[in-house]
Every structure is written in C-alpha cells, then in structure tokens.
Length: 425
Image 1: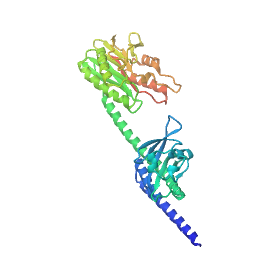
Image 2: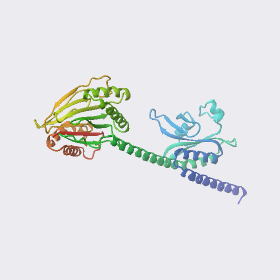
Image 3: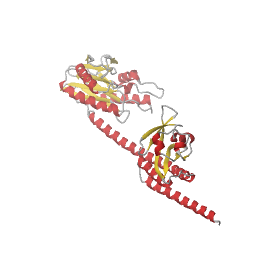
Image 4: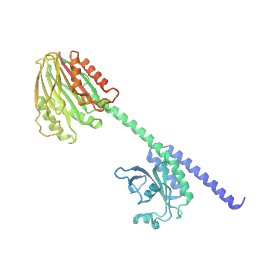
C-alpha cells in the first residue's frame, strides 16, 4: 500500500476513533444530568474540545409570535440573552439556510454586518444547526480556533455529528424537566386544594327550625367560589356566598382574602347591607382593580320566620314558597364588590313560612353547558326545586346535581360551582 494511502487511512481511523470518543463522552456526561442548562453546558464543553475552539455556545430557538421574520434565541453562555433578526446575523443565516456555516474571516465576510466589538473579538466561526424530528431546535456555534487557523470541513463534519446527537439529548432533558415541573406543580395544587377545603365550613350549622345542605365543586384543582356560615345568636344565622371573577389559583387566593375580611367584620355585625358596604371598602383597597367579587349575604331567623337579604352583583336568590307551591326569584340589583368605591348596598326583608326553601348558588350552576352549547339556566333550576321542595335539604341538593349531570352529560364544568339549600322546618 502506498505511503500516502496508509497515512490517509491512519488519519481516517484516528478521526473515527476521535468522533466515537467525543460522542461517547457526550452521551455519558449529558445522560448523568436532568437539568437542561447542564446538558447544554456539557455539549458546549465537548464541542469546544472537539474542534479546538476558544469559545462555544448553544442557542435554543423558539418562534416569536409578533413577527414571522423574528426568532428569539436564548444563548446558553456568559453572553446572556440576545435577539437576532433572521438574515442579518450569523445565526439568522443558519436558520434561513438550514445548513452549517464556515466563516474564515468574519471581518471581511460581506454577508454579515458586525459591530466593532464582534470584529475585535471574533475571527473565525463555525455554526451548525441542531435538528430534532426535521425541525431546527437550536444552533451550535464555536468561534476562534486555538491554532489561529480557520475551521476546516472536518471540523464542520465533527460538529454536525455532535449536533445530531445533541438534539435528542436536549429534548430528553427538556421532557424530564417538564415532567418534574408538572409533578411539582401538581403537588402544590393538591396542597392548595387541601388548604382551601380546610377554609370552608366542615359541617353545616345545626339550628332548630332550619335544614341546611351545601355542595361545592371547583372547575380546577382550586376554586374562586366561597361560602361560609356564622352563628350570630342561638337562632340567627348569617350565610355568605361569594364568587371571585375567574377561577383557578389566582381566584382561590382572592377567596382566602375574602374569608379573612368577612370574619374580621362579622365580629361587629350590624346588618347585611352594612357588612357588604364595609367589605366593598376594604376590598377596594387591597384587590387589583381588574378583580371583582359577586356576593350574597343572608341573615335568617327561623324563630321569627324572617330573613334579611343583601346582594352585590350576584345572581337572584331562589325561594320556594310553600303557600304558593312554586319557586320565584328574589332579585336585588346592585354592583359587584371592588367595582365602585363607596357603593351603598341595600337589603330586602323576606317573610317566611314553614317548608319554604331558599337556594343560594353561583353561576357555575346555571351557566353549565351541554354538548349543544345550551345553558342549564335558572328555569331548569326552578323546575327542579318545584319538584323536590318537599324533600329534605340534602335530597334537594342531590336532585339538583342529578339534573345537572343529566343535562351536561360527559362535558366537563368550566366554572366553579357552589350551592346552599336552606329549608324552614
């Protein structure tokens, strides 16, 4: 075999061994870490070593929605976060042409506009795309070969091999990190749900002359609906039902604030309307202006057969009248809490008789929709109450739930749901 052929074969074998060694080291090092940043750092370090560069970086690509011609690129090195416009910079060229880029002398390359700092610091450049499932997910860049020479085509081939291996390593790490984050978030939401349920009354009040039941179902893990009971005296009960705008963790946080405000005010309770006035004033000081709260307060005295009702932008109260054998809506139009400062809430007196039934509910009940996009509505709720009012409060709740489930079928609820049934006995 001629001497030149032997040298070429030896060089080829040496390059092959070097490539396999780099890929093996890369797989072992990257596989030992679950952190995306650590995997990226490992790839950069191995790339710098493989092509004998002074510096290296990985830039992960995500589409920026404000313009189809922009790509946000996060640079995983000491350079920090930068934004590059496609076609006006090195990385933009690689994204646009989807192929490796070799620059022998950046200062004299007419394709790129560079700053004085770049001209001073960067001489030679080698960039290769990182692919994952036929999509560029990032760019691997090395600059300034330590020997002072330009990067070679062999360097480009080796860096492309590293990039090809890196795509799956990065994606695996991202998926593992996403799974861990999802698990952590799920744990936090479960904890938040437990805390929120602990804030709600664990039992209904046992008051002579009243039969009370309630139902609570958040649309998400946590809810913005809130209800509470407060015993004013042996025979006087105060009932609160509130619905924070939106749902989920932010609404649930607001709900805890409302509970604190309610319990601080009720110690000096005078009337339902005055309590709403005070709650509105306090919440107007502490809640963001985009958050509003609909609320109902009901004071009920089964001995005197009288109730006082005040409303803050909430749905009408429903009452089944034993004397009329029918259900009616008690509407008291008003403004939600935290919408208008110094709003003067009003109260309405309700005269009661034995076997009357009062229902307080949030809009998650009446605005529940079925597969035809029809809403459950107040009419169906009133009809259900007309048919079940002779039953105990717990049975009435069950009937409402059964009617709601039959109406919505398999369709999930998109809003929180709370129902309170109070029957005069």
